[in-house]
Amino acid sequence: KNMQEIKVLKKKLSESFAIKDLGAAKQILGMRISRDRKEHKLTLSQEEYIKKVLERFNIQDAKPVGTPLAGHF
Image (cartoon, rainbow, N blue to C red):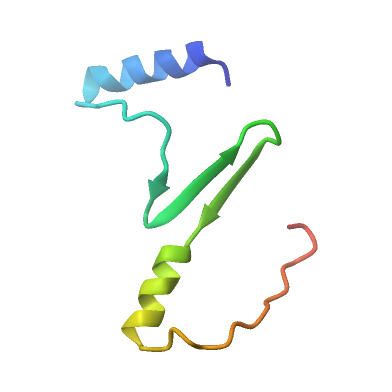
């Protein structure tokens, strides 16, 4: 979308809600967000969450196993 549309949306939201523009999101719901604008890719990672779960159950040294993804990924 173009930046003008984003500005209009932010203005409309600010009329009803107290908002603060914090710039591009780097994390949401515990997931790290990575952007590659050149390649038009957005990547979400739960690496930190996974590490915390492994530590919680004291299985940090567990052997990783690959999980196949469906063909459309």
